[in-house]
Image (tube, rainbow over all chains, first blue to last red; front, side, top):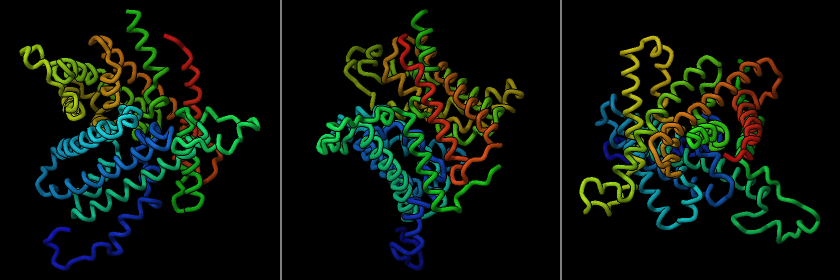
Length: 220
Length: 205
C-alpha cells in the first residue's frame, strides 16, 4: 500500500479481489493468455516438482511485480527490459539457492527449469502489462493471482500424470495399496512421456472453453 | 569430427527443444500462424543460438565455473562463481540480441526487414537461455561442441515451428469442435507431433 493515496482504499476492495481471482479462470496465464508454457509442461511428471515449481513461480512473480512497481517511475523506458531481467534474475538466484540448500532432490529434478523461470513469459508479461503502470499493492496481488493461476494448471497436470503414469500420488503408492495390479492393471507409460503433458493441457483448455463459451476463438 | 556430427543430429532430432523439453513454446504458439513468418523467426533463433551458446560457453569456462579463475592467479582457483551464471547468461543474451539487431540493420537492411521484428522477441525466448543452461549442465568440452550444439538446437526449433505452421495453415479448413479452436487443437497437434518425434529416441549415437 503506498502512502500517497489520498483516499485510503480497502486492502481487499472489489477491484483488488478481481486482480487476485480473475487469473485463476477467465484470464488464466496458461490457457487464455498463452504465457509461460515453456516451463509449465516439463516439470509435471510428478506432483512434487510441480508444486515446488508453482510456489517458486508465484513468489518470483509477486515480488518482481512488487519491486518493479516500486521502481516504475525511475526506470528509463529504453532500458527497462534489462532492468526487469536483472530484478527477475536476482529473485530466481535466491529461489535456486534456497532449493539447493533445502530440497536438493527436487532441485536436481527441476534441473535447468529453475533457471528458466527468468525467461518465463508470465513474469515479463505481467511486468510489462501491469506492474509498469500500477501501484505496488495491486501489482503484488496481480503477481500472486497469476502465479496461482499458473500453479493450479501445473498441479492438475502433475496429479493426472503421476496418478496414471506411475500409480502414485505424492510418492504414495495408491494403486499398489488398492491392489489393482493383481487384476492385471498396468501403469500407462505414455503419461510420463513429454507429449502427454501437451495433450492434457489441450484437454484442460477444451473443458474450460466448453464451460466458458466467451473464450472460444473465432475461426480465422 | 564424428563426435560433432553426433551432437548436431542429436540436438536436432532426439533432444529437440520443442518436443522433448518444451522450450520456446510461447513464441512457438504465438508466431506459428503462417509458414513465412515462422521461417523468419526460426532463422533468427538459429542465428542467436549459434552466437550466444559459444559466448556463454567461454564465460562459463573461463569466469564462472569452479576453479575457472585460476588463469588470473593460482590463489583465485578456489572461487566458484557458478551461482552468478543465470544473471551473466541472460545479460549476454539480452545484449547480444541488441547487438545482432544493430549489426544486421547496418549491413543487411533486406535481412533486417525480414528478421527485424522477431529479434527483440528472442531475448525472452526460453529456447535461447535453455540452450546455454543445457550447455552448462551437460559439460561440453570444447568450443566447437558448444557451437554445434547451439546451431543444432536452433535447426531443431526451426523444423518444429515450420511444421506446425504448415499444419495450422491447412487446419483452418477443417471442422474442429468450437472450444478446441485455435489454442487447444494446436496443443494436441504438438503432442501428437511429439509422439512422432519419439521414434528417434531409440537411436544410439
